[in-house]
Image 1 (cartoon, one colour):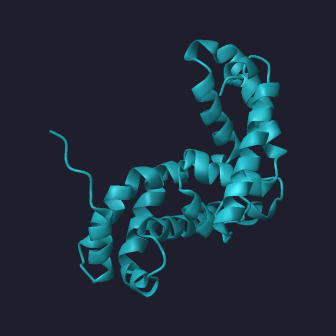
Image 2: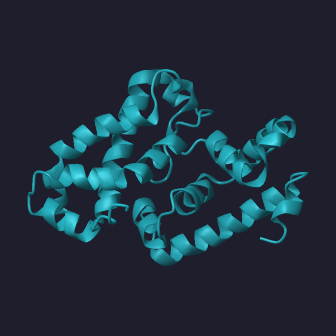
Length: 215
């Protein structure tokens, strides 16, 4: 038998009420989602020095220290609060390890419109190709990844970010709007526009377009 799904509303209420065990339980319940988010945004230059688990370990300490803050933000969903603290820790770690390199406009660690490190276009391209190619296509996958990454780099940062939030982090439209400081209507329109652009990009890549034409 599997464990029952956590009751996020109950956990949130306990955290807001000051239950000392609630932060750990809530963080644990959201750990997989947070880890996926960190993997998307962790700068590749830190490979070998830092991984998503390291970031989450430090973020968990921050969550415990700041547990009382959520009570003063009744309008903020608990997951977005955890995500905010985790992205703040990720940014601190980027600054610590990369220093002045973060000012290089050509690096993917630049801030996205949501105030956190931007998702790596390498990670986005890798995820997309993972869904559209098989392991036996490794020889042509590398070339496709380079071309797809170049195309993603050519998208507007806000379009890439809304795709990351909705398509890869699987946030709701309302959650994405909150992260980006947009109205729900604006966020929805932006996502539709970005998704259309992404489909155009995929359709233009040899060997991939045929796989996505019916989607």
